[in-house]
Image (cartoon, rainbow, N blue to C red):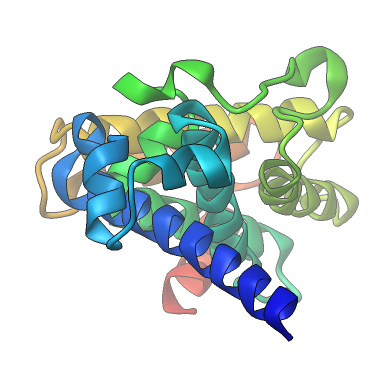
Length: 224
């Protein structure tokens, strides 16, 4: 019983440290994610960070992993419909919502912030077919890949290499949301209508779909 209780306490401290790190990142930025204040926030000693994670770099790795797990869950909420292009666009909408709702976490996940120098065990998407070795990140990318494959199978787009096409669409959305997070398009969502939507429509037209069909699918995705 004592062994079980000790294991439960150990897990609780680890989980609380992870939660505190994510909260501190969101509210105070990456520079504030440090061992001493995190430990103090849960009433533990600084050594708890090293006991449960090995150090701050490993804790940040776990924050990144948790970020991708939440990202994956957000994309997984998009249900399949009879319109694969609408599903693809709906995943793009979910992607943007996650990034805007978790800007500091999103930037850390992709190694774009001060403590993110380790980055998430990235791979070369163009040669390995996967952007990362982190399973949660692979799962998140596979939602986009599945949507692209379904759109191609339906004849709406041409995607001889679905991974490459998924990479193109990902590049568009990722680049856009980083600019939106930075305030380049303001904070009223005008960039969505004037920049991202036309950009995605033009890309899908280039991949073989018709503008009319894409606009109908977009209306479906926005209404979901």
